[in-house]
Image (cartoon, rainbow over all chains, first blue to last red; front, side):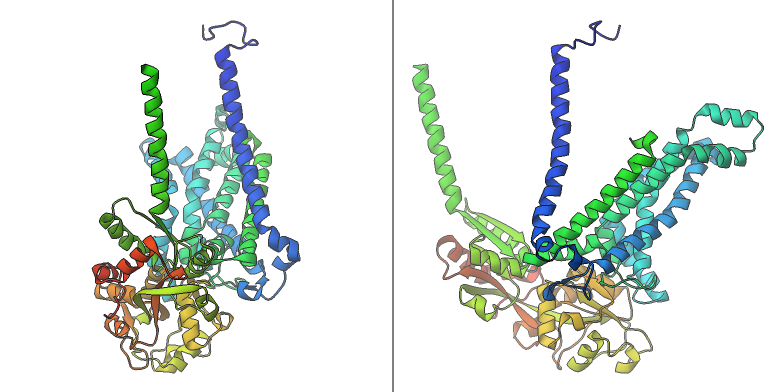
Length: 291
Length: 273
């Protein structure tokens, strides 16, 4: 007997209380998110109303002192850095998940996962410090100035790697054992099982893991701020210093006033919308795992 | 009898809380502004609190511009600005100097260049000179390190060299002094500018950077104190009009020799007295 009452359709008083409490807390979280969005709108309204969105996508560049707020260079930098990081982290993370799931000796599986979890838990400012003192000088020897799009991509790839690896592993673990055993019974090689059965079935989960990683890369601030060079320009090569949207907000917010401040809030709003779009996409495609 | 006691208790409680709130209102100082001064103000505040039991000093950062604005609007009792007041600001605000800070041009220690003229520095920062060979150094690309907009260090630098920020062709844009020092220390071809106090400290503790002299004057804490070094700035506390009461006492304390050790510990230069 698990239920103290047989009829669960007429819940006890404790149940009613718990339902109301958890319901109102869940509602509060949703309200909080709405308030954040509302605040972003309100703070950026000054600049949205005066010139509309057009001002963010036209003009010579980002010169707040002369009222020019062209976001394109930073938007490109943000997108390229995120995409580059994903391109690096996806194969590495997936390979690590496949190894852990299908090839690793049993004693290695747990330590490997622990290392990934540890990697996921390192504060971003520590990654940034490492990047600034080790990675950037290395790149500078090769092609100055060192602080560059490449440094940002490498740091971001390292940061999102555990996200990709852990979500891919979870997706692979969710592949039904019936499929795997069936494939084995049919005499498929291990390579055949991995490529032909496990990967296709885990595709949706791996995809939404990649989207989660993209969200983290988009929102990362401190580490990128320390290694990317922060020059506002459209990246022309991997060795060009760039400034991403988050770094721009962090660098300038404490000094900004008036329209400049509103423009920074507007770029925050843009970031939030991008992340929301990714989250929606992840929910839609990876419904089985994260819906 | 019991109810009498309760009433009495309640009366005392209300009285106490009234006293406490009045007391807190008169004994709290709010300082906002320059992130350069904030750590120093925090230390001075701690010592001031120790010597004046019951007083609370609250320090918040946000840049010199915020310090000016907050002092003007009364949001803060005292503003902090790491620059001299502009003429329109000086009409409403009074500046009280508590220390000096100098900005030094830093290069990597391995860079053989030991001297740059103002004109050369200007040309390097505007991209007209792109290789150290052109100023007597090795054949190496110059990495220009600039500060992000809004920092008073940047303002002072631009003002001294008569530059506009959009003219500067930077390769790296940094937020604070430490990031600047780490960037230059990690790149032999880099040039940057940071607070002399911080740079001198890092240099004596083995960080591979060198401070360039300006106009023949060595970039040192001593020269900044004597007012000889061209690229230096005052650290000011700001009040709206002449300060009174607690604010006045705090400012007098911050200007006294009793805090010289704190000023030195933050790598700033105490006032010449």
